[in-house]
Every structure is written in C-alpha cells, then in structure tokens.
Length: 514
Image (cartoon, rainbow, N blue to C red; front, side, top):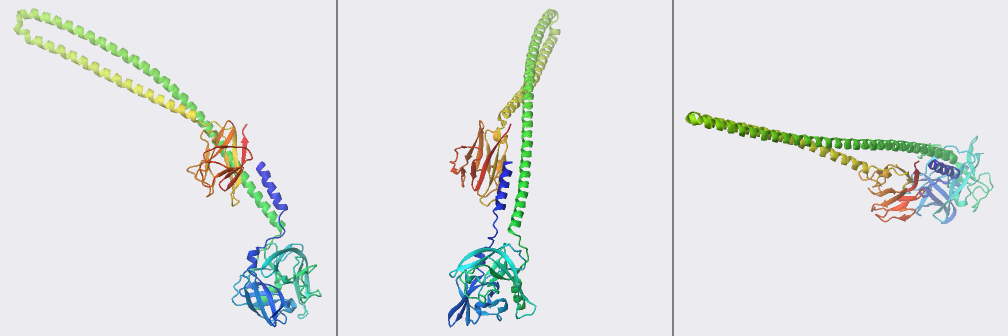
C-alpha cells in the first residue's frame, strides 16, 4: 500500500504540473530556420524570418521582399548566408512568398493541416542577433477569415494568438503543442501597420497564416512537401493518457508483487515441509541405528555361544576319539598278542579312519565359523551405514535455515529510469551465509538485471533481527545513504534507507512477519 500511494502521488504531481507547451525541439527546429534580408543599393531595407518547407525552398512573408533588388537568407544553425531568389511572383494578398536557394541543404519542417481549438497552447520563436533563438509561448485567441480583394468570394484563413514577437519574428513558423507547424506568423492584415512597418515590440495579438494557404500555394507550384497526419492531443489529454499508462503499469507491478509473495509463500511452505521431512528422516535413522545396534549385540552373543558350543563339541569328540583309540589300541594289543601278523594292517586302517574323522570335524567347524564371521561383518557394515546416515541427517537438520523475523523488499530505478524490484523472503534471510544479489544467475540467488551491476555485487545477512549489507569488492561499488561501503565490511541497514547497488538506487523496506 505504501508503494501504491507513492506511485499515485507521482501521478497526481505529474498530472497537475503537466506543461501546457514546451514541445519544440529547439536544436532540431533551428536547423530549418533562416533570417531573410532584402537589399536595395546593397543596403538592408527589410529583415524577417522564414523556414524550409522542401529541399531548397523557403516560405516567408511577401511584405519583406517588396521592391527588393537582392535577397539573402542566413542559416540560424550555421550562420552561413546564401543568395536567394523568388521562385514565383509574390502572393501579396496572402503575404506569402516562396524563395529558391541553391545548395542550401537544410532539412524541411513538416506541415500539419489538423485544426486547433481556441485556447489551445502554441509556440513560436524569436531571434536575438543573428543566431540566438528563444521560444515564445502563447495560445490561440480566435480564427480570422478576411476577404481577398483580388479574388472574388475568396477568404484568407488566419489564426490570432498572443505569442508576441518582435518584427524579426514575422515569417517564423507557429507550432502546436506537439511541435508540428500549423502556420506562419504575419502582421495583422486588418491593422494599419500592414504592410509591415518595422515594429520592434508588437502589442495585443499576432496573426498567423494557416497551413492550408501555404499548402495550396505549394501544390499549385508543384513543390513537394510533407504533411503530418496525426492529430495533436492537448496537454491535458496527454497527461490523462500518461496517467492511464502509469496506472496500468502500477496494476501490473502490483500483480507481479502479489505473484512474488505467492511464490515466496509456496517456497516457505515447501521449505517447512522439507524441514519436517528431514526431521522425520533423522528420527527414522536414529531408530534404524538403535535396531542395528540391538541386532549386532544379539548376533555377537549368538556367535559367541555357537563358537563356545562348537569348541566344547570338538573337545568332547577329541576326548571320545582318544578314548576310543585307547580302547581300540588295547584290544589290538591283546589281539596282537595272538594274531599280531594278521591284524597289524587293520589296526593301521582304524587309526587312519579316526584321523580322517577328526580332520572332517575340524574342517566343518572352520567353515561354520567363517560363515558366522561373514554374517557378523555384514550386520556391522549395515550398522555403520545407518549410523552415517543418521549423522548426515543430523548435520542437514543443523544447517536448516531459521527464518528471519522480517522480509526485505528493495524497490528502485536505474540510471535509465527502468524499475527494479527485489523481494527477499524471511526464509532466504535465515541462512547463516545470507543471500547474494548480483547480475549472474550462476553466482547470485537474487538477480538485478543491469550491465553495470557485478556478477556478485552485495551480500545481505541478518543477525538478531538486524539486517547487514556487504560489498563483494565490486567495480561500480555500493552506497548506503550516499556513504560508500568498504569491501568485506558489513554495514547495518534499516527500513527506508537508500541502498545504491552500482547505478540502481533502491529504497529498503523491512516487512516484519508476525
């Protein structure tokens, strides 16, 4: 709402201070203006103005050229003077003359045949010295239709306006509010001072010959010229149009801001969901680690019991085998006494069989122990893996951002007048490393699209509810309230501070989140 109020105040200020006139590009128009001089016996007898309507052709007042033996035109842009001649006879009844100048090379002015209401603003020019041009502002007072004596049922169409000019201003073009030529200044034909009486400071009103009189003459002489077809809106109409455009841009900006807030809200909810998921994964990892430790303890206990049982069984087998061997040996000895030769080979076979049985038992015990050891190793590996996953989950939970108590909106314009808005969420400000603003998408979390902004320009961090800005050793530098920042030295910024990032000047807005 604060931003909308600011923009609306700018609109109101613009609307109620919109200039009524001031649309002439003086430097451009001056290139097409000349000072007209009439000579008799090499003396200047009349001096006025004129303007270029076609390549090498100039229109001016006819009364300046009456009885002239020679004519020159002086370019108001370059100061160069050229010899001119009448292209056709003087239109004295319309106070209009057309001059032809060889090698003039000045651009023509465009003529407008659009009407203009009484009271609308107009502008003309006056000349001081040879080339100093000044704008004169006025408004249309009335239309004049004066009968032409030489032509029956024909009238002369003129404007009356109050953009008062000295005598040298006759022959100058009259411009509307859009900077288009709508006529040529002439003395009032109903006044006793017409033909021209060399007035220095005319009073009352000035007349201007309407363009349709000039267009009719040029058409009759087959002289090419350019017509402006567009209608010229008034200053109030232009202000209304501009206000409507600004309101439309404001609505678009509000929509973009709302969309940005919605995206931030979605991102915050996503981050919260991710944090909850991370917490659940951490708890699951801890439970898995506990189960793994319990399984390992049970496996170790079972392995130890099986090992002890196998060792006891082996010892019993050895004792029984030894006892059996002793009994067999005793029997054999007794038998050998009677049949030593017959049973000697059988005794050896029995011993070998006993040894083979012992070897088989030992091999079985070895294979069983090896298998149990592999099972224990796998259980231990799973336990360590679960432990590492739990530790990684704990570290991820420790690095999760703690949302800041506020979000930051940077609103400003660059040196070309283009608007830049950066919305930084409270979650992004919650990271311990802060957020980086700059021109490069690969290096900065928030972008400022301007060529003079560095790839990584500034870092924003918050600590205990305070916001700090740090310049990242940039080419075009950073300022806070016109104070330049030293690279690597964070400075606290507050709501409504002015933050200049290169050529982009922002107003800092801190929006506290309840």
